[in-house]
Image 1: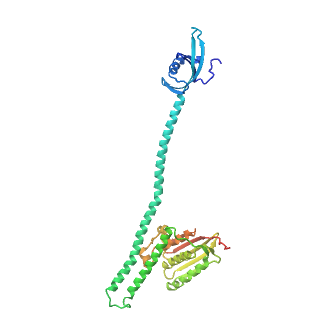
Image 2: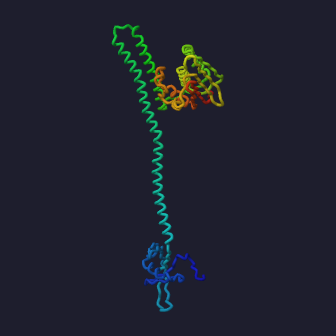
Length: 364
């Protein structure tokens, strides 16, 4: 073999005799004989071992072997106890140590990344929770304030009536009127709060039935014809036929009452309100446009927030609670539609409601 080893050059084969002497079977590595003898001295039979010697690491295994032969020089017998295979594994040990460092470093880095990611995700998850909490706190504060106002009015008028027990009903009629007005306002506010509370708890379910939006709008318009004359406001209606879809009739009726009531409140005498309904693609589009005071651009994003009123004093005088448009948006959202508003100060507002056309289920 021209001096080349048959096995892996890192593997040394040595014979160990009964008397502890060793014979190196790899003469081409004769310079290692001293180290091999020292390594073989502590090797146990049939037990693979790892031995460190002179800053090197060896993997050793011993296989029993029974054979006797005479030495060529002394003619004495050399009884072989076992054959020992020795392999230097410095590179493997170094590789394992490096792998251990990589694993430990990876675990530490991974834990740091997980902790950091968990912290960031927790912070991100807390943002909507904090916003919901702040909105809830604001909602409670606004509701308390709105309820306190009519109760204070009722209490004040009742107390003034008690100060004059000799007055007739006719003389106290204006205070009775104030009490009835505040009572009606509080009743409306409580009903709106109940609707929103049910919506938040997902307990306000829709009763979907085939509804002709055009016919429903005509019914709603008839209720506002009296206001058209009283407020000297022109109401123009343009409704296309065949606008039937699956919807909750009561909620849709409430939606259009809110929008028209809002338009009449903020449209001055001599103004005009336009109501239109048409089919567009797979949707029913209803618009309510008025020539009222309009809404400032900075207030438009908050129009559908609960208790939001751009001019609170003016809205309260007109009987507004700031909940109508919030309820309107909830109704539209429950019908998987959308509601938008476009407005300009001094020119009026346009509310657009888009309700998807749903297939009517045929019974039987």
